[in-house]
Image (cartoon, rainbow, N blue to C red):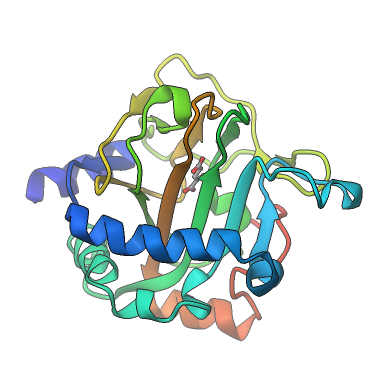
Length: 242
Ligand SMILES: O=C(O)CCC(=O)C(=O)O
């Protein structure tokens, strides 16, 4: 545990081979798939990270992002998965960590669309306490070919870089040197934790099956209160706020 904490502080990310059991993965997959299929219920929280024009609405989503899925399926909040992820977030960054928001990111089969290099902090408002941890849980076997995560080990005092949006409201991206990037393949139930300043990306999905990831973001309780006071609930448009 202490080794993981020190590595998280130093590199800005860690991998946990098995955060949850395959039984827990199955429970999550059932909820995940029903939300993915229900476009009406999720419309207000759903978008394509690859960007999309109005006339694209009938086309296949390449990278489906559904923000705050637990506001629709509240059983997620009580699940053992959310408890285990919170336990780890507290071990890594302190007892005042709480869940800020959750999200689903699915890469549909044969859509071959990378999630560009970025730092999550670019999406968030500036907060005095910068601690944060995103827990990225694999619900499928994740490999380079279907879009496992890649990270660049953090440098001391890593600054927040300038970000731009992909066209048509897509993901934020930045320019970065990638020679030190490492990929993190995992089995279902494995997870990574990354810090808000850690550069990360994933390749497109070139395989015949989905690449489902459930992501939980944690930060200090007081910072979540500050965000909510300013109307930030992580359901809004994608733009650089920081
Ligand atoms: O799932 C992906 O492709 C990207 C995930 C990501 O950027 C994140 O969890 O911050």
